[in-house]
Amino acid sequence: MQNTFKPGRRGRKPAVLGQPVVDPAAWRAEEFKDSLDFVYDLSESEIGEILDAVGRVEKAGTALMDVRRQDFVMPRFSRIMEEVVKDEVLEGRGFIFLRGLPVEGRTILQNAIAQWGLATYIGKMLPQNKSGHLLEHVKNAGGDINSPTGRGYNSPNALGFHSDSADAFSLMCLRGGKSGGEHRLVSSVTVYNEMLKRRPDYAKELEFHFYRTRRGEIPAGEVNYHRQPVFSVTEGYFAARGASSTIKRAQQLPNVPKLTEAQKEAIAYYQELAGELSLFIDWQPGDVSFVMNHVALHARTAYEDWPEAERKRHLFRLWIDLEGARPVHPEIAEDMSGIKLPPGTVLKAPLEMTLVKSA
Image (cartoon, rainbow, N blue to C red; front, top):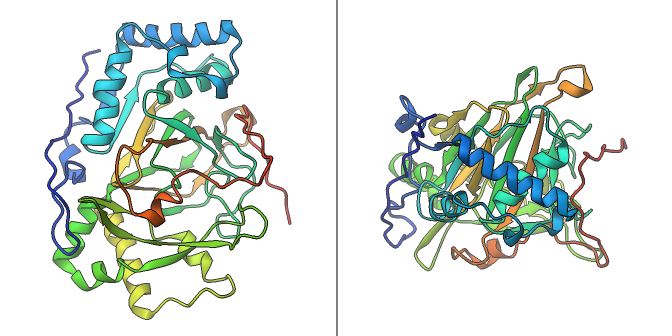
């Protein structure tokens, strides 16, 4: 297969709030109307290198969460991961998809090693819940995003445009569902620039340091919220956070001030504009994405699953620390180390999802 991937434009200017942001991550969905330039199609030899690296890790018996970059060396594709994939995340569009990796007929462990090994070239894995899971399963485990402590990954609910508590994330598709579950991406830089054109008053409202729920996943004695601006600039670098369920659910917490009408309108417009400008991603089994949260928002439509357990929608998710590669606002940086764990929590990389206990 001939690879049709084309890097995004380069060239960034120091950002200033209230002015259009010039950043390579300011892409528009219509750029991909007739092409999939953001998809890197793996060649047979590259797939072979990845699978060989998986085989070496498996043969060595190294625990998944202990796999390091030096354990996942690929003769030629290591350079592609460093000079193409990571560079595109940091200095290009802010996202890239690898396509063509076989997952059918391979074990959960083998597929997890493949994604994890590739991700070691991007950064360090972070905990995604209070149980210390470094690998999480995006699968219906009986969760409900609308509950005060709900999480989107373990529910079939629709998810509004948001960003995760990490610099970057990676998803790997094992299987799609029966219907729905469309993955959507949008450049938050483009959303900001468009909002400045149409409703600069709303853009200004979203500079407010909003209260966000920590979903109950906090050490004892800490408050169940934190504060962050949606739009911010740090050392000339623009960053955006989502404005969806974490802000909405924080309104149920005691001592959190109620949103003003202007803030509610700005949040609703942010979601509306993100949807208008977003790109729909047609997942294929074996796809592995890498996305920087500071310049992209993601969402998902609700989905219906197959009744058979072996056919249910299933993706892997990793949260990735870029280890200071991009400056961000201090209040955002505080939330970029994954879920803050209770003392004594042992990190894990479970190969099965954890069912949500009913209340």
